[in-house]
Image 1: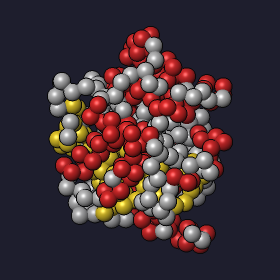
Image 2: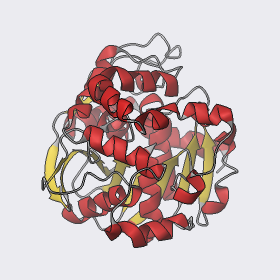
Image 3: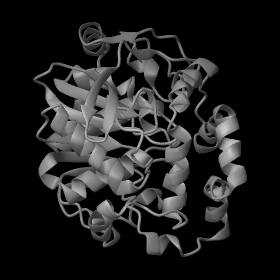
Length: 353
């Protein structure tokens, strides 16, 4: 895409459109000036550029719907007949990672669905007997079940962290349900055999919490200290993001979910082959271990968090459809919350490029 056309698309971010969408679509907005905003950035949308502080946009309500194994809590913005977009958060985050993205997309005619993943917020298992499973295929099937429950045949799916992995799995295994993919940090599909191989020491150090979670001390520590633990992860993963306590607290409530600790611990232990998955997902996992190529239109997004892998060259071959890669400098791991305009632009562009 040319620089001129890229610039032209910035028009969809104008403040009037976003504010109108927020007023109409169940999203409330209160913008505070940011010391990090560029000079002349006086509109509400300009004020949500990465690096600002304080919660500016919050969902007015969270809906609930039975979907597969779960009763899913989700926020929604946009007209019911809008083009569907499903946005998926990761750990340790929640639906508010997209609170500033949602009105931008709603203003462009999208129906935006932002669900709490299993183990977060108001999402609950429908049965106390269901195994609290955090493996990748189970989480991806939650998205398919939600789409079925909401009568959404296909959607653009975007995400970061766990959400990026889940979005990629949906695109890989059920491409007929995915019109486009926006994946932060690229192709994150887990291969258990590959995960048994050690990484360079600096990379291993970056995953310290996975090894902590492998111990019973780690389980107890996370259970007792998850508020401070996850706040530390935010700071480590996004060192240039000057978030404040109200912004973090808004999300931290999602970690009070009764299944949160069990899902998080199982997710990371399963990835290291320290916990078993469920046999019902074995066939899907075998397909995923083969690193299936994704054929739907895709934009991958990298940030400072990705380090040497930010150029995307290591996973570009995994995308066989229309594909482009973007690198955001000065942005940490929580891309949609730190750089909402850039993330929203990627969603729009993946449909039209």
